[in-house]
Length: 290
Image (cartoon, rainbow, N blue to C red):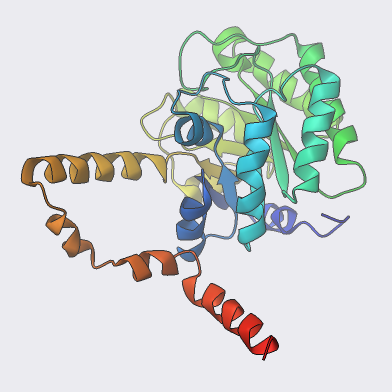
């Protein structure tokens, strides 16, 4: 992504922008067709969908890149990627961002948890020292080079050291070059308000329904100073719920007739990911050879 060409930056400047998280090609396609203006890639979603494991820092950089590249290539939207702790020390963080920039992402999120990390809405988190966190952000800024890729600095220090420490880490991350700050898992509206006031227009909210943070509307978050709101569960919760129900019905009846009410077919399913366009390309190739 060349300098000054990042549409995500413009969306944030005119925010708040709502960014639902996908975890594979079909979830990205469905979310894009729903009319959103940007996509996130959920680290938790990738851990679950690709590895069948919980969000405990088990994903590798290679697995992340293998998942992100087709999403970015097929999507017409800017993509913000959760890169966890950056997969190692400062040089690893630098390389992680370089690779994601090369893949065409619009933004990279990095956090201050001790590796291996865990979901921000679980208990038992630990964070590195503030200086090490700032080094991670500085390495990320170096890694993006002269591109306009946005760096999101996420801190989980609130749960470990309190809100004041988390806000100070956010301020230091901004000084190191981060454009956006995510203070993870505030537990009450007062904390949500203080974070937004500290980073007006540049605060990020993680709208993780059922987690530790209060459910706040996009409109209200915008009023409080949030420029970007991530929804990491919009593709995960419904998928698990619907698949459980469909699987139970299949086992009970021995038939998939109950799926007829979805009004889908193999062709209709493939159309979600561009069947007609691919067949048109195939026809163009065939015409070119005759």
